[in-house]
Figure (cartoon, rainbow, N blue to C red):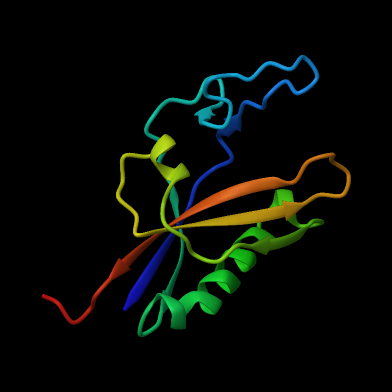
Length: 130
C-alpha cells in the first residue's frame, strides 16, 4: 500500500468551556476556521510512505510527519512529535477531500503557553488495483 500524507496549515481554533462561570457552550469542542480563512483549505503534499498495511506503515508515517514539522523554518527551534494514524474527525472542518486517516503533529514551543497542533490527512492507495 502507498500512503500519501498531506499537511494542513494551522487554521483551526477550538472554543473552550468557560469553567469559571459555570456555563457550557453548546458546541464548545467543535473546531472552526480562524477568521479570514475560507473553506475548503487546500493541504500540501508532505510525504509518501509504503507498507503492507496501516499498522506496518505507522512508524514510517509518524517519522515522516515529525521530519516534515522539524524541517519547517517556523518550528526549527521546537520539539516535534506525532500521534499515530487514526480515523478522520477534524479534517472535515478544513477540507472537502476524503482521507482514510488523520494524524496530529504536535509542536512543543517552550516560549509559548500552548502547543501547536498541525493536522495531516493520509490517503491509502492500493497499488495492486488498476
